[in-house]
Image (tube, rainbow, N blue to C red; front, side, top):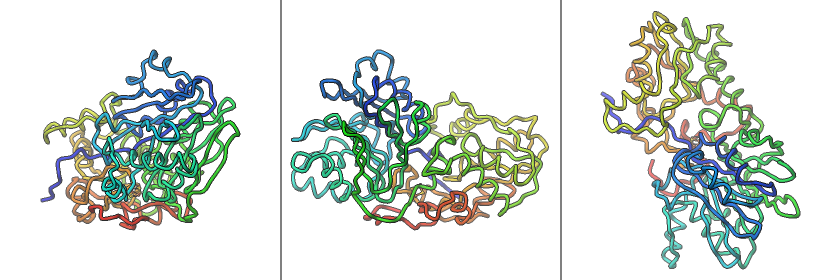
Length: 463
Ligand code: SF4
């Protein structure tokens, strides 16, 4: 009998960041762009604007962008440069003190800071600073990053202090900083999280995903490189390197699950990637079925690929209720079952009597997969063959994805046959790690949650 901790069975996005420089009505543009990356975090959001008087004004709160920013709040945020953030809490609990952007005052002035990712050596550095008398207001590793910048900005200048801090920190960060009217954007040396730059109305936009640039009508310029700091000010855009590390370890889960299908990550469109995983899944695991059904929304593109390669018709066998809050947490097993039924409905006339090739992006704890298989069987499906468009998820993530520890991952100590039995499918197949790389059209990715090969040291983090 398999047992798992009572937790909601979904991977959660980490966060999304945004920066705008030199664009009239920056906060209104930020509102549009943050809504475009809302899928990366729905727990809280905020915007910090640099006004004509060079003073920073910040508005932030818990909730969705449309709720935190009613119209009158945006009219208070006048200025042509800003940064913004959408948040799903990973390392820190969701207290108000952890909502970003942060505002920090140091000897060089006041600056605003927002960050996406997770710093793996944060505890080590923080303990050392605390023993020297430094005080922290929040439990967030983002505050540590901002604190390190503030410690040296007065003596070394903004560029050098950001690079010194980036050099000291290990792990995942895509960061935006607004200081003295200039915008800075920085990526960790491994390049775990995406960050792209575009041009808009004579100014610049930096965003976690290119879908935010598209939503603004901005022209894509390029991705910020791993280990790069970009400074945007009155003299235009300047590029610096805080690291010459040569590895590129974009998070595979960005392609598989997190990013919007219309985003391009380092030159690879997310929808096209997912379709390729579906085609490769069929090459590796051809099953006999009457219809292909994708678990909405993130698995629809992979299901299209599987259907095209197999010539098995793609059907809409499951419907997602988009009005159910993604953060709906159910206290008891019976309520969790209800939660999946509230979020997902089978279309009986489509699935009844059919053998189904069911495509999903991943299995984390297995409980949602089990409930979806049961929904389809209750609606009359004859067979359900589960096909996962990624390798077996077996290792926790330490780079900003909320998976918890190994005991919460069904793939950590169960093989495919046991997992298949637990979810109640007729068969279960995973995409190979080689096929995943092939679909990405690149030679390296972070695949630590599938392989256990972490690109960084883990500094004693629990596995
Ligand atoms: S461990 Fe997995 S989820 Fe975490 S960064 Fe690497 S690929 Fe992404």
